[in-house]
Image (cartoon, rainbow, N blue to C red; front, side, top):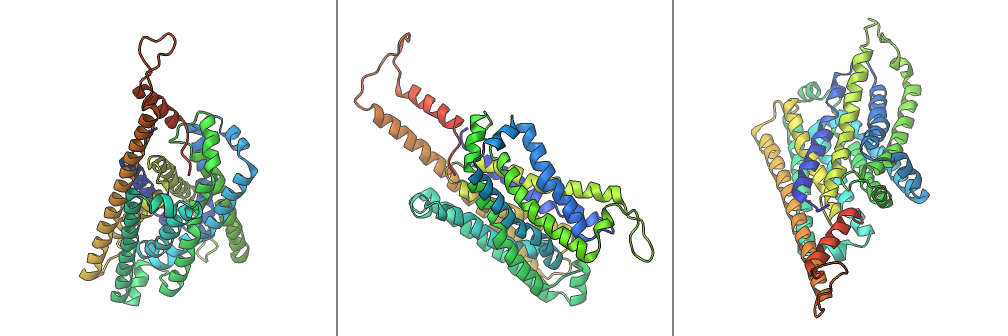
Length: 406
């Protein structure tokens, strides 16, 4: 499969839209505690959706997973567990800071650590990335993305200063700047572990390729392993909260424990949690598709993902009137952050495009050098020589059927 960075950006934008939207259905859940609806949604997003959707597009998914080396399973699962702490506290970040400011702080840390750490660990940062024009351009795009996230954070802080405490509480009922910033910082650092889990799943791609899985879907079995780790962390914490708050019976109670014994819409709550769970999963469904289109610089996919989440998260914040009452200066910062984030995705995408051109020129030069000074050879049964053009066609076919290294 020939990389197509422009298509990759589109897939990452779809993933960002899904990620920024998943929390919206939770707002419709009634008379359930946070741990109840978070665990129900998590079962759909971390267990049901990954295996169900992967089994629909990956032939012999069970056999693929059985062939994965134990070491690869361990690292994918471990990074998923660590990422689970970030995913767990992401919900708390939304509660304390709201969608706009919460995403700005959490995703700023997540973008920096998740994008730069994998190539540094693999030893590619100073050679492959800094040693090429396309790699440097991608890093410029990463820097632009981080600056856009910083501007979004400034907009949130500006809003916090402008609004009186009563109005902030009316918009975000549990608003707490100090607690929210601490939670968001921890969330962002730990959430970057998802990027490490995807990188650790490289052997899974190779196994999937041997089973004839399209390069577009080869990342889906990795999600099954990483998300299993994330589910473990979140499930344990939700059970702890159930025991502490005595809320475990909410899954079956048709009435709340409140004095008025209000009716609990169980069917609607489960439906909303299922929608939220599947919506959340689709962010990484599209992420793996976008990553497959980015060519040699797959590490940049994490930046594109974070930027897309910020863009659509900010738009959701506007739609849900979280910026209601903010002044002109704040709204200008919001508009500037969105513009800068969009620009960062275009810069990163163009850098990847240059990388694909460079890779194609290198392959052509190598093929030409290997035939320099050679006489054309006729294969048996052929009426024409095996030219360099035919060699390149064969090489392109091999590359299309072989997964790229991560």
